[in-house]
Image (cartoon, rainbow, N blue to C red; front, side, top):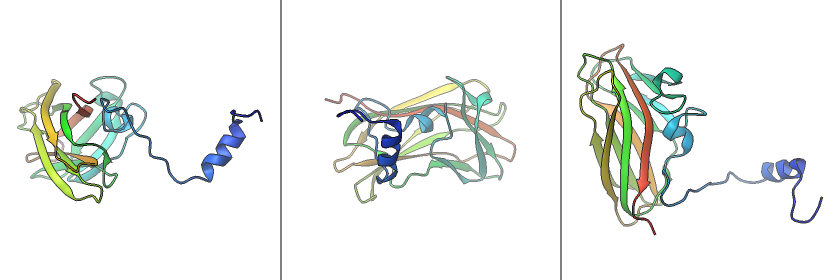
Length: 183
């Protein structure tokens, strides 16, 4: 092997002996990883939190090839959440959160995206919510500017609804939490 170059076998052996790596992002990119944000290559870290089944679905795409299909299984509310405690890397300051959603036509479904800012130990410092209008069969984008408080090092996301009946469907795509005016 030449100095400064890795063979595929050597690289694989070296990586197998390492602890898991944390791949960070540029300060102005989406704080959520690509799979969780867009579901293009997998389901990301989404988990069915309560009263739903979830799946990466090509019929749930607003942009690209896939989105997150949320099917309500119980009455009186529903929820999905990111399952990567204590969350994605983040920093204090101004941020913008947004998501695209659509729902079962003729129902009173609203999607609420809750962004939770946490410190290094995982303690919740602040939670902020952005709510969609009543969803229909047409895609709608919901956006809000947020402020991560001093001490923020992690961020997690939940998307919930207070209404819903078995059989209702909510499609989510292009979920973003992004620093704004970063240096």
